[in-house]
Image (cartoon, rainbow, N blue to C red):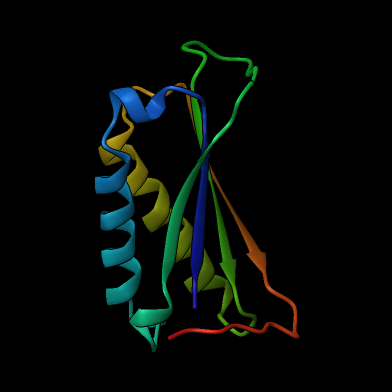
Length: 113
């Protein structure tokens, strides 16, 4: 059920293939042994309308991994590193790349067709 939300600096969609990034993240998570239902993996990007960071270039991408509780610290670290590695493939020249994990607390409800 992992959801990956990538916030990024405005204009990154003009200079980088964010759809390819989403596809690669989806494929990586869907294939990971800790993900039992690949059809529940969700990846999306959100552009920031304004930002300021302390490095040059003034560009960033920050991934938040939303996970249901229950994965070991080792698996969580593996998923975070996989996310950063994939981001590096597509966003090598971006000033700041970061990844944060957040557990989704119950209740978590959803509707899918």
